[in-house]
Length: 170
Image (cartoon, rainbow, N blue to C red; front, side, top):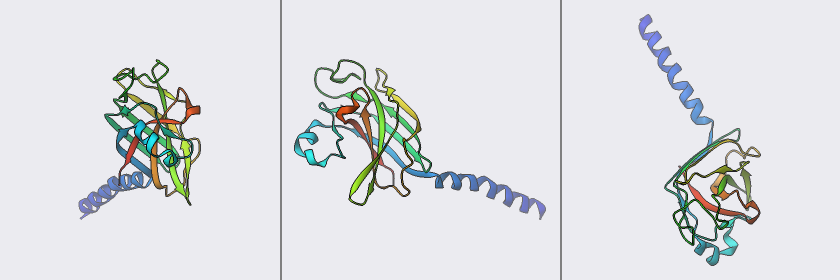
């Protein structure tokens, strides 16, 4: 009898941390797609604030993002490379230098999106790989309605360009 009670207590203790960890998550993104300048031309009013697709196409092989309720964010990107223009197949943007990136999470509040970003930007290696571990500049609302995650150009943030977007995991 005591061994059954002990086994039950051990089982419950092992699953409670897992459920608590799951509740700590605000939003996740698994997979991604690259920016297309066609979207910039066809729908200039569809941007999130002043954030628009990059001038050249970009591709991304894999993207995994986890955002916690307290604003902690973990981003792993693989294969973010220029998909068009003179620097095709490289991690270089228009400025002929390797890009740096930061992440922006957008949450719909009312009829507008509010932005929560990471800083400082991180380097993208020659294979297009990068990792971001840190905090968003502010804690996003819970729940984050209609979440959008963009990987943005850190070399020229004043232009508000994004290179890749995350696919929300539901």
